Image (cartoon, rainbow, N blue to C red):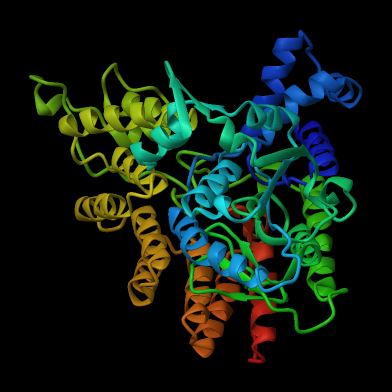
Length: 529
């Protein structure tokens, strides 16, 4: 697939789903196209594109490959505890004051294969609201195959990372390697196939909701579209209702009626001004940027529009990997071999040649494959075994740290990062992940120190510099925050035109500049012209 064909697929996916593939996730999209072309016996990408535009079944198969994000039960469990112990009883007590109390209504946007919506239902059960109060739960997703899986309610073991056995025993029937949601939970949730952009016109969602989950979805869209979606969600939520976002998502760059709650990632809707066009300026600017990005990719050097080389690539999260070469400080030798025959691991990685059987290079590639296939238990077991033979291989420890972080084992993830830094104190990826862990725990000073070290170790890591500014603003130091944001702008501008179209953490340099300037303007502090 050439660059022009890739862009045509990007445009089509954006048109039908709103998901943005320009400048990011290129491997994911190309792999999906190749897989379905091979399955259908087609040899030309454009012919296949025309096929999915007219063949509904093939369209579903293709969309399933490019729109299924990672999900699991009780992801970010802190939010479900807040829902169970605080919000549900509070909302119920408030409604019981009314003459004819309406049900509590909860919406799960982009619910994927249903784990989030069923987790909500289980939280309702745990809160014992079902005994004396009715709760309506609705989940929707654009991917029809996802919704079919959600309705079946059958899940493999890897959907239960961090879930206690008591929850599994209470709400699932285990049959072999599959976990079946009990009927009493399934009947609490209604699922629909729907685009996030049609929530205000859908007959399925005619009511307003007390609680809306929009978690780990915005990362797949351009900021212009996120602004539109948030504006639409405001129209679907009752005054005083609550919006749940993922821990890496924020409303900081969008002017809304949502304000922070005591729980991280949860916002209360307190409308103070009319809704129309409050985000129009940002929406217009980011839409213009999206169009200019496409024109640059077509008219300039095709390499300029490609993402920075990440090791490994998605689905690993923001900032977790380092652009450029991997610095490998550890050595390896097979059991019983002479250390003088140890292969040059860094040279092997840079050259792209596979390492010998059983080498760290082979283990690394296998671990990446297991991680991307969501076979996390296998990856963790293999990594631990490999690290007993090559304890200084920082790449293997980084993958293990990410597995721990995704499993909400933050102490173990942080310890992995510290071990990596002990081996190589210039490992930017370890500092960045450690910063995110500290940020999630509201340890502002430690997070700031880690973000600074990330930039020190990797001066082109403008996303870490950007997070420095956001963290200062988050902790209330607006002056320092704006100063760091202006430094971010200067950093990106001095890196040249190529940086504007490269991508770190799904942001191009141009997008970061726009976001920095909007934030500086918002806080009425002078910005760099």
